[in-house]
Length: 564
Ligand code: ME8
Image (tube, rainbow, N blue to C red; front, side, top):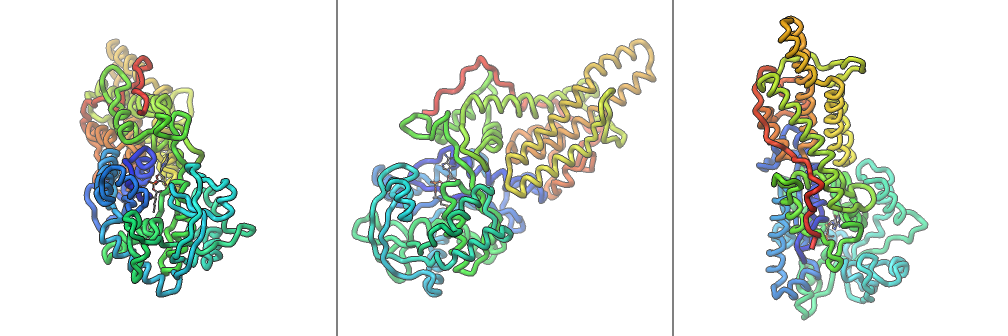
């Protein structure tokens, strides 16, 4: 799952990033299971269920709707459509898109609240506290003091509020949560830095968890009337965060989809870690539901060295992303493309570490290194040599999977490909999509190294010379060796292409079509990636002349204009 996004505004790079990370993960998992084209059709037998959506009952949706002369529902409709469009453009293969204003969600939320009221985990009381209006959340007294009564996020002053209110007995679950997070088997908080962050707030000497408000009052002010009503008490509505967290369960809480719970992972940004690593699992414990297997908190994108802000003019919104993808980094007008952007975001993003700077210079650098000079160049070199020296017919390695270039150690591609595949799978177990994708680039690097050591183009020239001199036996032997080398290269590139495809599905499809090696549906990754196996490149098969995958960026071409 991804976070569900507030619809007060249009999507930006942060939203696209969170959904992209989930998409790469979903595509990888489908590929592992043998659904390489993934996401085209939703099937209930498909173990991957990828959920995204929008969080619509926020007060800031009411505010921005009013500022735009729209009702909250109209404004939500407009922006939810923008999110759907943005995610379709970025190529997200989500299986469902939940909007919290949909009856299928609202009805379930009411039922969950009723259950929690019946069990006594939700009760009525009165609340006074420091409220962060921008974040729509209360801070603890300590946290408010620590931040000098200003929002830690947007630095606006906190507001002191008192209100009758429904509470959730969070305190009751502190010990259970602490145990679960420490044990990290049924419920993992990842990466470890995020886990430590949560543990620090759960373990003594941290102040004991207080029960948390789960409602907001409803008054005559229309601004307070947006949201799901507390069952049996229409003077209160469900706090937007509680409403939102329930989306993960409400969507799959049907007879056909129940098997998808518990979620494998909630991918979130670090800003919403507390809600996901503490409040949400406590609610689930109270409901007697299983906990998600993992929460993974990513860092944030910043832009050209600074926090993104509209006033600084460095805000990377969806239109800016469109412009970057449409920009051609060379004079041949081949645009950078969505796949290159996906690659950059997925491999260079703030997945598990510090906040990461988005800069055009870095985008171009990575594009050249990994794509134009990496996968693209290697695939085209190998394809062109097979075209030139073997009329585009895949040469026969006669069972060989390894070759030792003169004066070098052996290149055993069966072993190298296996290592890359295993590396990717291991990385995915920790949700490290960046490291998983890099395995494909590493493998391409091995092929490049192999080409540099074996110099097939020089070999081809020598072969022609030997043949011209009349030594046809030697020429034939050379041709066989050349064919073996090129087969090893091509087959390794094919396997590398599988490992980068979750980030670059369009471009790798283009390669697979020209090489005639489109992965058949229903074959698991382990079989697809078996070197020289029945799903591999077949000796004797014809490969077509390929178009260019990625055209090298020309440093003389000016970068696209600044974000705003
Ligand atoms: O918090 N870099 O929604 P939201 C990376 N509705 N990721 C970013 C980012 C940035 N600069 N800015 C935002 C909410 N994000 C709630 C969530 S979930 C039950 C409810 C990502 O629209 C990040 O993952 O403010 C953040 O958590 C998410 O967008 C949601 O942003």
